[in-house]
Length: 435
Image 1 (cartoon, rainbow, N blue to C red):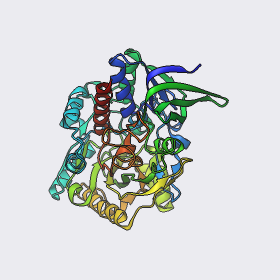
Image 2 (tube, rainbow, N blue to C red):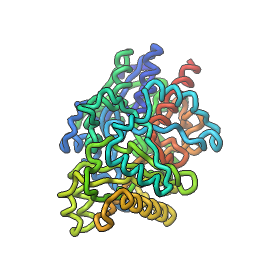
Image 3 (cartoon, rainbow, N blue to C red):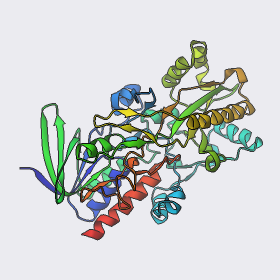
Image 4 (tube, one colour):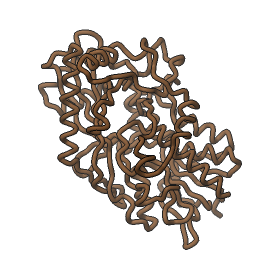
């Protein structure tokens, strides 16, 4: 016989972990399903490959690389720990007010900018140079605890490999709190189908191994599997509009070599510029990939750049992130089609030129500057509010909800974690109000 719960949550990223915690703390019987495992993150390349879908080589049909984290805690295991309030347009354009939830979350997680001494020498150098150029650089709010830095240092570039000295908040913290409140966590459990009838959702089918599948029943199911897996499940459940259109928040890293120390061991994105966000949908920050990933980027840029890796510890990276236009699709098999538009490419070109200018101003030799490849940062917008889910995040299948980056009605172009947690808390309140 199938096991019965009050709520089943599919996916343990920031959205799923928050809903599971809130419902468990309210006394509901909660099952939290995670396709990946919950092994400790060591920061090794092998460990990182296990956390990423297709070992980090997931691409759209057009060749755009996307990183899909498949592990307990989701993408928060490999993110830069940056935090930003939800965009104003969610309230003004879509009439969704997350302000109270966001403020509560920022306080709960101790979100703040880093002290000047912990921003990093290279990042501070970029901020000073950018401000001399009138680029309005400033420290970025972070979900990092400076008291837990190891010898005054964060995990640096290896954060993107999962390394965490304990200084970085991840959704695994909320997962642990959900379990402590009574939720059941199942890892290695891939949701393959939604069970529903004319009255609404009834549960899910879960693959637990190569030859084992089981059904779990609940009157409420929350999909938080991510911007690509969630629309696949909804299409299989008979909601064909899911996956029609997506956004990626494309990013590009621009590297320069400095005579002094680079940014490899500094907190990623510790300083940023929002100057062109409102006018052009462009945001910049300091960031560099781990050494092997940087080497691969240099190789793709051309063989003449390969030897620059010998100066890796003197390299400074500037991240260019843009707000892309809605387009493309996710099919029922999880394949992604996403072509960047001419307008998207113009934004990337503009951001890259700004990045190159600040690197030179900061002291990097012009001949050392090289651009990496364009890649997708946040696959999202595939189950948009107003198109696939309503204001309460419910699909047309009664009591089947979505709470992950797929609900964004347009590209967020900012760190997603605070917005996702805020949506999840709002959803939790809605579910409890129905009881």
